[in-house]
Image (cartoon, rainbow, N blue to C red; front, side):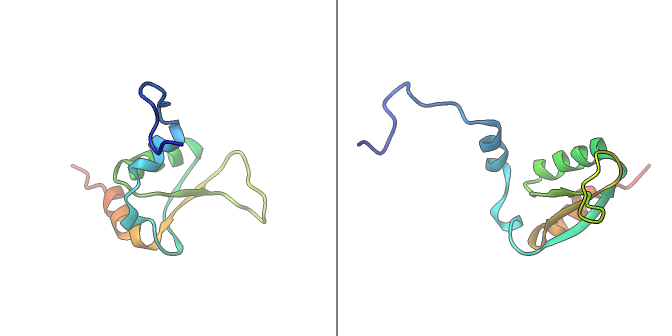
Length: 95
């Protein structure tokens, strides 16, 4: 069995594979720490996208007593190695 695909048989990467390729390994180590809080799922997903563009993986959390509600605030958690970079990426200096 060849170690490479025959010409033309290569499948395009999935959304998950494209997402994973953006993550910088140096930001993916350590315990998860909270770096921000979003007021709702839409805002949390926006922040998630901003962090991903910087190569920082994150997890959106909204557990209340073991139950994940559909609406409400979300904590944004990143690995310890990416926490400082995440806080810098999310810092905004207004006009």
